Image (tube, rainbow, N blue to C red; front, side, top):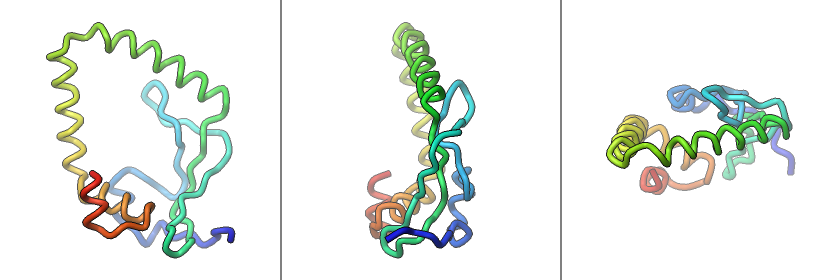
Length: 120
């Protein structure tokens, strides 16, 4: 069965996460890109479309992989205490959005709220 009904507006926590009804799906060099196929995020409980994701084109994907390899080399030469501090800061930012992220996991995976929070 093809999902057709869009329900993004029913989930205000999605905006808190910086999402919209149409999103770009590839993060490259500090920006979100996506001019490839469109994938639909579907609520498995209702088969309603939550939002659309514009996937990367093959060229955008290749550029992303190239940029990742460049950054990987820089990351590997970053002192461990600095890397640890960066990872700690990322964790702090994720914790600020834990409830919204848990709700997103619950919505997209058809899980109860406590399971979504547990995954975060």
